[in-house]
Image (cartoon, rainbow, N blue to C red):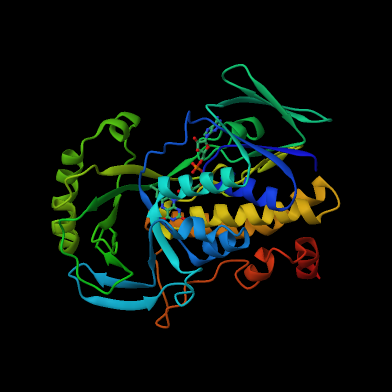
Length: 391
Ligand SMILES: Cc1cc2nc3c(=O)[nH]c(=O)nc-3n(C[C@H](O)[C@H](O)[C@H](O)COP(=O)(O)OP(=O)(O)OC[C@H]3O[C@@H](n4cnc5c(N)ncnc54)[C@H](O)[C@@H]3O)c2cc1C
């Protein structure tokens, strides 16, 4: 594999570039955003599986330098009575513990790590079309420039331009919830350190984690019709607070005080997914991350799945005898696992599935959980592992 073009310098694209470089493959990243200054945006949690993928890229330290760890989760009912308090993931391993951080911080940390390793990230390069030919693939950018490679990886997120080239019929699908996010230092939130509290409101699920510096990071998932593009872009913090607080007072009063004390920006997004079964590849073009398998945020796995994608793709291209075998190995390992996540997460958002945890605290299993360590382990041959699974 001579040269790979990665479109999108978000979580999936940057991690994939780092992984490909580690595998000794030439790679360049093309990112539409004009500079590396990220909007900080909503927070997310990286789960232990995502942290395991990062560790295989020797990139844990870059990410544990930002955000804060989470080692347990409390579930309380709408009135604040504790239903469960369970450990989260690999809580005893500082490298693999869940981590809570802002999406922009994670992106910036990964981009800085890629730059430190000498990987070129071209900013201001917005892909407009893809020309996929028998001898190579060419990316055409909005400024008229082009780049040629042997494989083009579309890591350009939910509204992927690469996906439109591969599968014009695939459309992102709203899953029934608007998700609000905010930060406040003014709320008094009790609970153990390094713990995320989930409030099972009767209709509005709410979550809150407090950083060691005392800043509460909260989200609320509100059922209803999707917000318009104008409402998403222009709504004010006060307007969003005024919508949420009365809803939460009726439904989950323990959460209403946290939201009422939030004076900074309140972010909102429509929870959206890519329908399972959508095509991921055509000839010399492949989709990864949200471009391929965006899920509603309910399971909190999107970024972790993107990091797993990066390791599995680089290992497949490193270990397979040819590109077709590599991409087929990649898809067979990734599709069942990511689509299970999309389905479960979407059903939680649609209200057709209630998140549950057995009393012992182990999270529900996903396809591939049993083999995950072996699949991600950098030095193992992924094609041989896949063949052994098939026997
Ligand atoms: C509000 C919210 C909360 C979430 N919470 C969690 C959570 O708790 N845990 C979790 O694991 N995940 C969470 N996720 C999901 C997670 O953020 C995504 O799964 C993850 O960001 C996907 O990474 P990506 O690189 O595939 O896409 P993105 O992060 O969207 O990156 C795509 C990149 O491509 C660039 N791009 C787009 N179009 C072009 C183009 N034409 N040319 C060049 N570049 C282009 C964009 O500028 C961007 O940098 C959440 C998502 C949202 C929206």
